[in-house]
Image 1 (cartoon, rainbow, N blue to C red):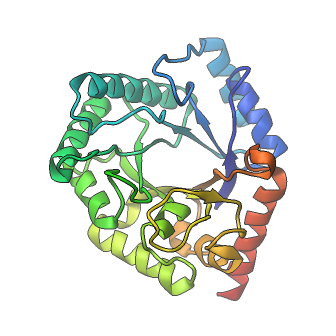
Image 2 (image 1 turned 90 degrees about the horizontal axis):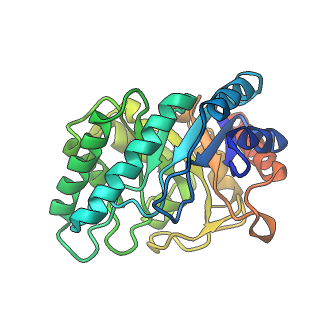
Length: 285
């Protein structure tokens, strides 16, 4: 398993590699632009080449891009969908340029509208983005289930994959906090195994292509997206021993998005803690 953290590319893409190495990462995740603005960042050919060179010389074996928070491929507003499409295409094209494993995407929100129609709109927008890009996959992220967000259950993820025509460039990013908050009890080997079996049977064994590692500050089934540091929330250390040692997750990039101390993001100590919990879980199996 390639355990790492979300890091900032502030100062240029190669800076993200430096920050990943400081934390002992085997995988990193970045935003390709400000996550709360539509305006894309311009990455020069030199910066992209320097990033690829730095990655090749490092212990980091996987890179993920996280699509910006404003993207809502399911929006009823044609203008928002058009902006979402343009932003997703830009992320996917950069992902191909830097050799990213995938672009992690929040599937969208139905707001207060019909979920079935929202899933259809999301699928149409995502398929258009795939048609306008090459190589880099989209990793649909499961959600905690707040409001009208799509992807709150394995069934909804399956419907989203179906809405994308089962495209070969569609994968899943499983977020541990979101799974727990949406009612999946992953605090035991059996519980994680049930989730994996349901995904395998409903969507396909190879669809899970990345992981987000976050503890949950809220209770099982609370439908609230509140990240906590690893082992300090409701999932707890035993839960992460089970989650991190799941055989189906071997070799996947596994990125911490935890608040960290003073809300400064995951530190080297927390990355090391996650590695230790995986080793303990493997030893207990």
